[in-house]
Image (cartoon, rainbow, N blue to C red):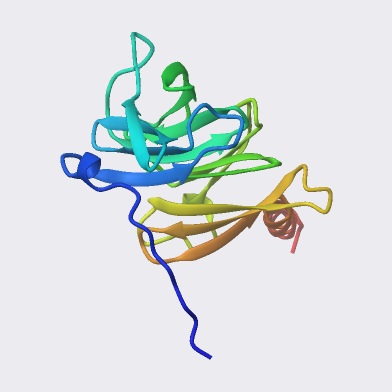
Length: 204
């Protein structure tokens, strides 16, 4: 049986002058249906009859205009990752606050019921609460087999059985590696290091 795929062109002319890095649906409680971002811009889209209408983001004095590399819906807000390593938190189309998250550009964001995961060009994966409180970090440079290129290009969070806590993250890197990072695996690594240290410290 052949699958039938239907495609609908939603937006064309508005994008021709902009390099777009992401387009993401927002949550129903957000003011707009779709958010798109890219080279030095972010746009918020809504439906007006048979048309899609866009409004540019208002940066104000909160943050500087810069490339928006990725984005994710977080409750009634929308969060974007920037080339400077900041998270921009949008309330409607107005920039509400910024959070210093990575030392280099944030290439990937994944939002879920357990929180938010970000991945950066600096090789770090960071886990945040839905209120954007930093919970923990993982450095790919400390992996048993470090990646050829530390830059993180994609992240996906895995939840515990309650669906309320992120327990592991699937990571894709610029060096074409795929990692699974978790607190359990980090504890195993620490235990291996302790055992190695004890063996070295015991008299022969």
